[in-house]
Length: 56
Picture 1 (tube, rainbow, N blue to C red):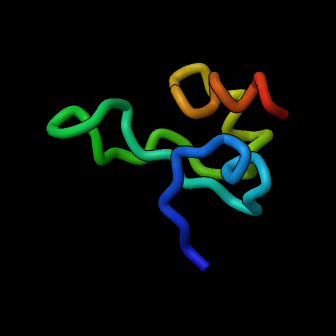
Picture 2: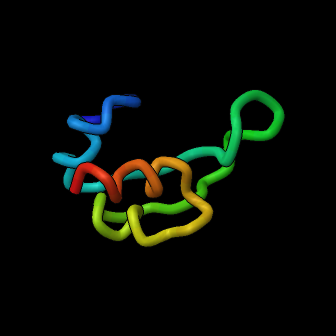
């Protein structure tokens, strides 16, 4: 199943995350990091990862 989600409670339960960004629009659409929520949380350049640190 593929889910496009911004809710951290959903993201932290995912088996695998593909974080796109780093921004939206023309500054987005690039793969920033892929992996488990714990792996994503370790990547400094991932906005999602920075917020995930607080909920893991």
